[in-house]
Image (tube, rainbow, N blue to C red):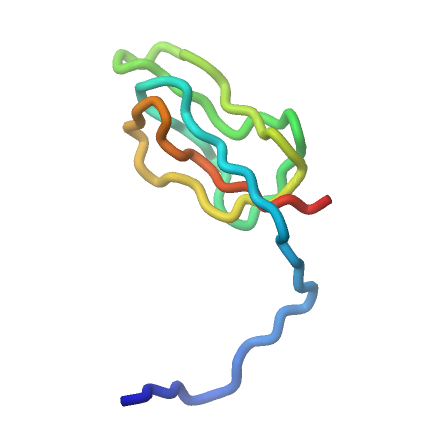
Length: 92
């Protein structure tokens, strides 16, 4: 059974081809914080967020490995070492 929606599909003004992506994984356990979200453009070396230990002490900053656009980020603050924090689509 096929389901069709009424109306026309939305058009995209400036479509972008993402041919490569990079995952940013945590090297620590603790809590992850970031004000960025999917669709934000980022630059190599830019601070993406930070990690605290279980007591709120700053452990490390998370920096961007490449110029790109955030495809997705984790929404769950508690993290373990190796958890994926971001997926960055390369724009260059």
